[in-house]
Amino acid sequence: MELEIKNITKKFKDKTAVNNFNVTLFEGIYGLLGPNGSGKTTLMRMIADVVKPTEGIIMINGRNRKIKGFSEGMKERLGIAQALLNDPKILILDEPTAGLDPNERIRFKNMIARLSKDKIVILSTHIVSDVEFLANEIVIMKQGSLVEKNTTSGITDKMRGKVWSLIVDEQKYGDIMDKYKISKTSMDNGFVTVRIVSDEKPAASAVEQKPTLEDMFLYYFGEVAEKLR
Ligand SMILES: Nc1ncnc2c1ncn2[C@@H]1O[C@H](COP(=O)(O)OP(=O)(O)O)[C@@H](O)[C@H]1O
Ligand SMILES: [Mg+2]
Image 1 (cartoon, protein in one colour):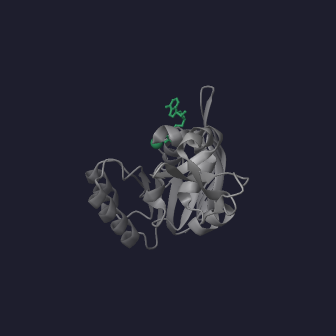
Image 2 (cartoon, rainbow, N blue to C red; image 1 turned 90 degrees about the horizontal axis):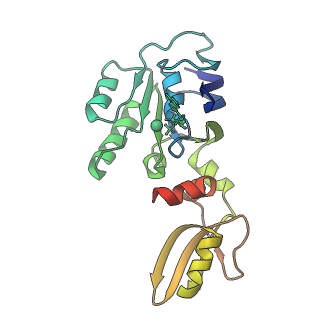
Image 3 (tube, rainbow, N blue to C red; image 1 turned 30 degrees about the horizontal axis):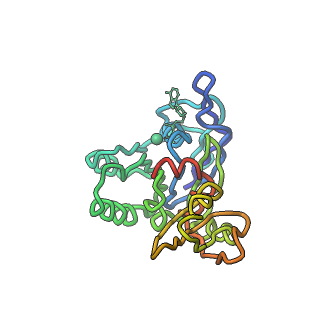
């Protein structure tokens, strides 16, 4: 099965929610990752044929026809169960883990992994850990546009040389925070260990670290990630 999203744009008056989006998906689990307002819901609604694109077309197996048997996921558990009832070939789940407790999240992920065979599963989230190990591929969306589509390891490979660990004394911490995107901080005995995402080595004593998807999110959405914390 092939789901082709071609030159899709959605405008609401003068607001462009989705901007010339192109992606082709095959069977597998896709994590649609982006901060709030990046256009995830609008894109999913167009795939689900709930909303008409301003421009572009969506095709399944090269036929330009309406998607039958799709389901738009809902936040409620009942919604997910209902979505799965008619065994759709394309399963679209919008922020499905919102409102789930940690145990329910684990159960949900296991269920999706089990059910995804022969299906295209698209699930959106603004929480990296929801999709880091579940999705075969991550589709990153920013301000309505596709930033990247890649495997988790493909994405983190590209982040090599951008993630650093640095130990500073507490007085210097403020300066570091102002200057860099900080993905983690730990304090011990007046010293602060900071994990920094930066194109350049932040200091001579900084040590390069193995990047994670979380670091990538901070790299692309730094300001937003700060607000979400
Ligand atoms: N019905 C609508 N009318 C006007 N603007 C909308 C509408 N739906 C979404 N938007 C705007 O489009 C942008 C993308 O929204 P949305 O698709 O909900 O993003 P996400 O799901 O990633 O949070 C936002 O700026 C949002 O305010
Ligand atoms: Mg949304």
